[in-house]
Length: 124
Image (tube, rainbow, N blue to C red; front, top):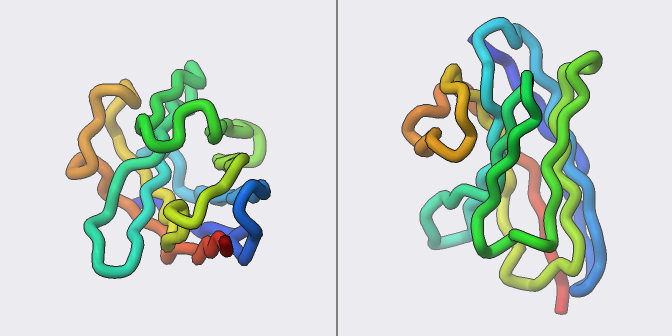
């Protein structure tokens, strides 16, 4: 089982930037890491994913061009840098781990370890 701990959430004004981190332990069982978010009253949605070994990335259209997912294999940490934030980016952001190998071919149901989430609030 992979243990995940997110950090870096907070309140930011529209147009601002925020960087989230996800520290992973027990990474032996993890090949792809993903970021998801859930806004109040809405379903959880995919944001971005990355593979540990190749660094291959995949983004949701809603954040493509505004966000960058990256990883530090030595530290077992995955990052999500978000720029040009909008009020509609407000949500609880979760990182998750999957044993799958291709971030583009990993549905949300294939992520089997989840962090506790970190709140991101974008004010207008």
